[in-house]
Image (cartoon, rainbow, N blue to C red; front, top):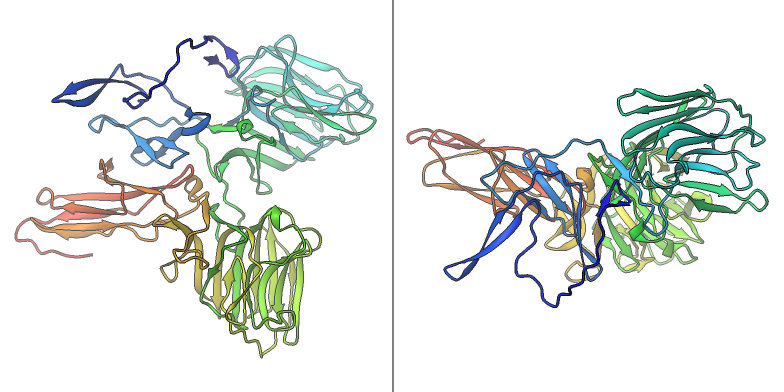
Length: 620
């Protein structure tokens, strides 16, 4: 048992061994007491606890089988299992629901996990740098760095916040020649929340408690005119040998970070906030839209989020959807859209390329090609060849190829791109900013008798070309400015694919008979990925009748139903049979969809009016 993260307060070896599995399931917040009644095993929970639960994990033969985190939506509160996507609510249906805490979101590191974790801010501190860190220590009995950047032989610039050998909060901010002390605040490190600010242009240092009360303040006695040679790392420090520039990681911390802000010459350049994206816990920079997970090699070294966590929504541009859900292609799947492009077609696509594609063979994120001589024939698409990602379009006499990154090697990252043939424009987005706009001159004779394939290209109406390795987040297809298809990741009947919200149609892998082959990830992460496409509808019913309510949220792995804000036990499907209730009353129903990662969505409300005898029934 640990206290404040790393400080062991109890440890004991288990001397007995087990060869059997218990026939009583494990409970949380109570102890199940089994007894026999008419020959059947009955569980009667007892010894209920009053306790805050931040997380609960169970391994079986070193495999994580339960990863429970706090969950809440409307009247539904409980624990979400990130392994299965199942939501566990209060098993005592007659009792009050769990109370969901409102603790501020944080991301914590653990120095005992494979040597600790770090996050590279990408920023080097200089004369115009101001840093503010909102944190709480989880271990206070050992030297460790909350953030740091510096040099090993002390002849460069040091930028550090740390716990020193005396168990005190301390900092370092050296000048151009390395002059400047490692300064202790004389404030004893504890597990309370603090805010530390070091302001180079303002020449000041400040340490406060969570209520903003000053614990330490000082004037920086050293001034800088140069910028350090090493990026600032969070959750620990990095040092650089002054002779060969080799970086080494040291003094990892066990600490919760609630937020980090970094200014340069008065301008906020980084604003790190805790997020969970595609099941990965880390910090999201709201300034540049970049998400950072732990920079470690082993999954067991990952950062861990807690409190009230939001989810990063990718970009603010108009290219494609804004969700974090995606389907993964491994070079052996594609989706036939059934749509043939024309000179009036616009395609918006949100995708990524996998490292497996970073060689010289040709792969299409999407494509439609007039015939097998695709180098000279009318065609449209995005492809990767010779290690670069490029947009392809027909200019009336030949194919125009325009590199999204010039001739540079394609990066393993997420892109959004637009090919707008009607308006003769092509451009791509990175970090929410439009880049590299190109104006192709489209010919009037553009004709492609081939459907657009996603995650591959089709030529001549039948042949295939270049299956993609990577992710597809969304794709929209317009014709004469009218939206014809809008594809978002989805799972239906256990099959992963895309849902076209315009057609109301599911598309699985076109290469297999049953549509299987894709994998779905991140659907509805923190509720941001998917939305309900079918909501339950209000209706009036009379005595003796019933009505079936239905709902559908693409990507959902399960459903819960609420009646007047309370969970209906055992109702976990897309439909709900509602019988006539109390005469003259109206009941409210909602459907809650939960996903394979941390997240949920709540449908619109449906009012079911129980009509008194003799009243007129009105459908609405």
